Length: 107
Image 1 (spheres, rainbow, N blue to C red):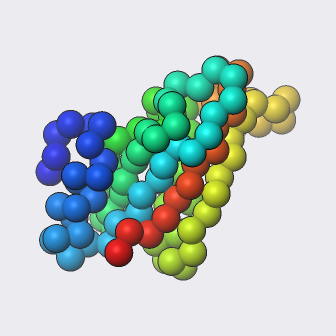
Image 2 (cartoon, rainbow, N blue to C red):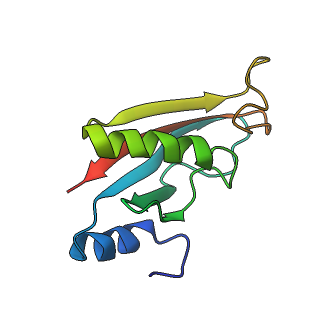
């Protein structure tokens, strides 16, 4: 397994070569204070292993849940997480920003 947490694409390639299903999540846009910048990536395989980060830990759990659904359906998703009064602590993005993440099955 690739040990550099920032090299999600390299790990995705290894998992694909091993015959694993792989989902890639990419930060495509941020507003305000955001822990990771556009272009940041996280990949996950069909065994639930993941590498990389799209939020420094704030919303990774929610993105992993969405990634599982993308893996099952094959349909990509555009996710938006931000701070509202109702969800400020629900997914943990308490930095005051907003992040948009594209999640897709890698083939």
